[in-house]
Length: 191
Image (cartoon, rainbow, N blue to C red; front, side):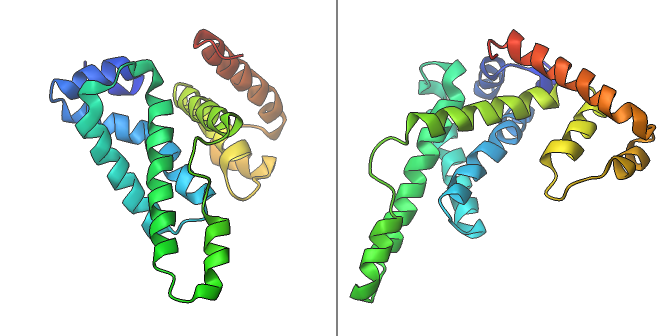
């Protein structure tokens, strides 16, 4: 398969197991944002998040052959990433030299158990929406990114200049792009 960007997780995993480096790169690209989002939600530093990302990727590479259900890769990655976050938090807690700070460190330490189902579901849904956006045409992908994913709010005038489209057509185009996104998500069984 030459266009790994459109491959399913199952196809990517099979290609990875066949030694296809491009498939591995696509798998990492596809899940990078999901993996990084979890350490950031726990308030870990960018360096800690990068270490966790590396650790999760190594674990995924080692465990790819034993993954029971390739369709549940995002859930497996969330669980694995959470465990790595917990390890980092526990390590931080053990390194506390001032006993007075111990209470604060313990309060910051997540419970040693599964993350609430709602948060896991939210992370999976966010990841699927990002994947679906990647399947849109360039114009729709850019428009939705400017409208919903940029840190700063983009004005219609700025979007108009960037995309070379009239301001009056941004709203209707946004509606059509969101409909395309909904169709992709429905096709994947997400409503």
